[in-house]
Image (cartoon, rainbow, N blue to C red):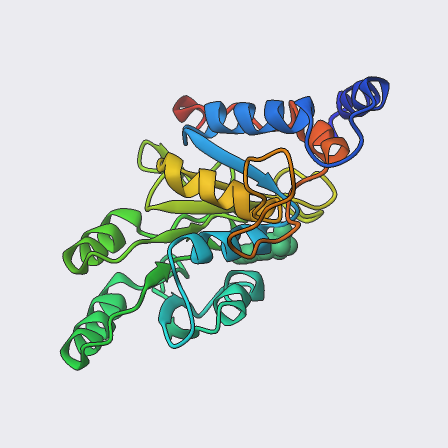
Length: 245
Ligand SMILES: Cc1ncc(COP(=O)(O)O)c(C=O)c1O
């Protein structure tokens, strides 16, 4: 904690916005988007649920396969199982400890020959080290497969002149107690795709239709970040400047 957090939490109590959603959630999402440079964000209760909503929003379902890194944390992989899909693990490159682009290319070639390409690829940025985004993107683009970056551990890191997570079709971050910043528990789903984030936001709020009464046409979850926890995250995102690296 940097010292300012208590003031923002106090302001949240003063405003009486205790329950999920409120101005502090909006402010945290806005600040995150600006500092990390990914325009659309939704603050959630954990990084694991951010990955779940990313997969669900991309239409991953029963019988599908999703490629993931061997060297990762279970939170980037268990949401594949939540969706009834199966993970296929791609081994690590010795120099980065992250998904080896050559092994990814080999496996995609094999799967393509069998006619069962994965629905998504999840490279993890392990211990603050970004995966080789450019190589992975090039390979996935040639098969038209979306990438979800697991940037849970890499907030503030750089890949070339980009911030960690600013790649692929979506990325997830964690604010668990052992992460770069913490809201005691929490996560963020970020994307350049407004539609994906709008849908994930709806799913995170029980998929309630925008009507005065309760109406649901799809199944959602209660995954939003509480306003109090969002308050504790405001101002703790480091200024991520290329010159610092
Ligand atoms: C690589 C990685 N992915 C996913 C997660 C899941 O995040 P959370 O604990 O917020 O659910 C974590 C951290 O816990 C992580 O280190």
